[in-house]
Length: 413
Ligand SMILES: Nc1nc2c(c(=O)[nH]1)N[C@H]1C(S)=C(S)[C@@H](COP(=O)(O)O)O[C@H]1N2
Ligand SMILES: [Mo]
Image 1: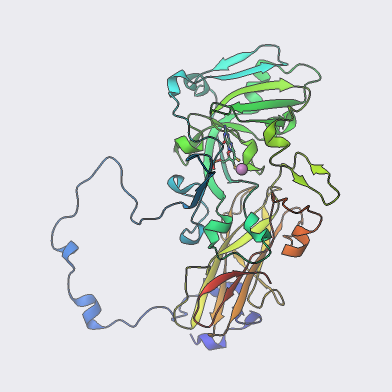
Image 2 (image 1 turned 90 degrees about the vertical axis):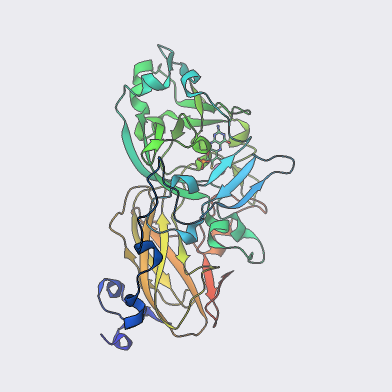
């Protein structure tokens, strides 16, 4: 098929989203020659490697932008290298990490979860006990509300997609629904909150409305089919779909049912933003609607001119993604992206768009809309109303400039 006759869906080369589904664009593959297929490589001349208990990943992908506070090794964050991944699941070994005092080494058999406070029957669960309850699956994202704060710097930072946005990951979380455990403990009249705390050195805690715990929260035991990674909360963590990552307390040790929030450090001094008038926005739990183009992005330089697949991720703490639009001209014109088959509630959704790069500079952007109709804001709108230095819940539209050599960089459009 003659690709030069494909209709544009928006300016600067964006093609109709159905283009990706058509076969035979014929622009990326090299023509087959006899020599390319003729000789057998070494790995076809003898049997391959033996089997082993676990299989190492084929490539050297690693978490990126690993940073800890001065004087510590474990208080900080590491990020998912989003630009090197496809699909919606984050491989567990690359799930981002955010710890306030490192990763505790917990002997699973000795770990207990206590539900106490304003309950009729205070209960204690070990790992074996929890395994006797029904285990449900949540294919959902976890995002730190400090994610993407780099977009607030006055000048665009020279950083790649994972370094700016990599405090987001998605997994299949398996665990026990909290409504079952809370009902068994028996909530006393008047109780409205529970304070969740972890078994790490600061016993990090967050207050969570009982309503959320009843709605869809789980005590997660599994991550992508295997027990949680230690960095992500082994042997058990709270998982609150769609809500800021901080409230999904890892190494969960206690849930104290109360009639008011604890107003702990992590929900007052941290993880709450200031408005320009000086008021703190307390308990901003849900993560906003957001998207990013993961490819092309900084570090993934385009080669020859021709048709490329723009690919990215969209998500919302309010529910499913309804649509994603992409722009190649810095937001002047937009084309509808194609969503992958799995458009799930409070999960990462992969989108793709076909783009003809003619070698001219371009500014690529994506804009997501969720099922409630909420639209991802541009950077100016996202900053408006925030006090200087208030950096949580950044969900602004990201722009990548592509130069005439095909290199991408973070810009403000
Ligand atoms: N006990 C405990 N829970 C915690 C944390 C922590 O340091 N200690 N960090 C929180 C923060 S800020 C985030 S964003 C998520 C990160 O989860 P992850 O490390 O599995 O990605 O865990 C939350 N739960
Ligand atoms: Mo976080």
